[in-house]
Image 1 (cartoon, helix red, strand yellow):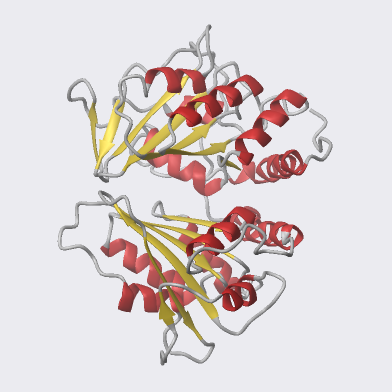
Image 2 (image 1 turned 90 degrees about the vertical axis):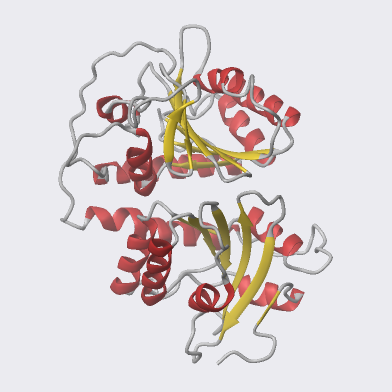
Length: 406
């Protein structure tokens, strides 16, 4: 079982390098954790590990032996895991069971490498885990590696702590994870067809109501409203979030998570005078107090070069705000101004990702006024386009020539 130095607050430099180098394959599993409760401005950090013969895997040991729920359960808890190996099938089940008992907990999982990636049972476990609205799974990138070296080494590590560039291994693991979570869904003949692709024209205006969700209860900022009144129509979501077609309307679905645990959710779109991103920045934050928060955007199209500049201006004046962007497709990716704008955002700490199938399902459940019997949206036919957009975004970040001709 667990012996001396199997857990703690800080990890040694040697252990971090040996265990999280994706080109190596250690027998142990390390779990580095950052945990934050809704009202706290501090992050609690911890780490655990297990050997291959231990009864408890690191994930289960943390959930059963380390984690302690607050005496009150109406405050959100955000957990970030950095795992040297992705969870096995049994750990995936244990994590889902834990989250069913703790609906106010979300886990953001970053993995250095994939465990038994060719095992069908493991793949099914990861897919099921990724479909949970309380879970996100990604491969660690260099930003994650740098965050770990500064957070989990006592006193922090130097900027040049990671002397080896893992980009090739990171890319390979990203493709493997994408294959598990996306491409394999095409081979699963178990999802029904979703909707159609009507291209009815819609007015390019802002959402008619601005709503917020506070501890899973939705209400209007200016007064009470019914649960789904602020949400967008299913046909608008399906039509505008197609990964292979551009429409005249750009939608921005947003989540604002405040330190007190409350969550605001709503949407904006572009109009004749400005883009959806600018609509959000000028209308959503104009009368909001400067409190720490994290913002997540789900965009139907990535920001243009000018919007990228406006976003950076906003973040410079709101130092306590973080932004994460998920986009269904890339806006005029051949234009160097747009490519450079996305690079500038990433270099200034903005995470940009292509929406995957789990993201479509997440948005459907939270932002769309779907009808009874349409409680999920898993468009498997999008997988090939998602992959192409993901490859093009990688070319943009690496400064490579465009991959897609249009």
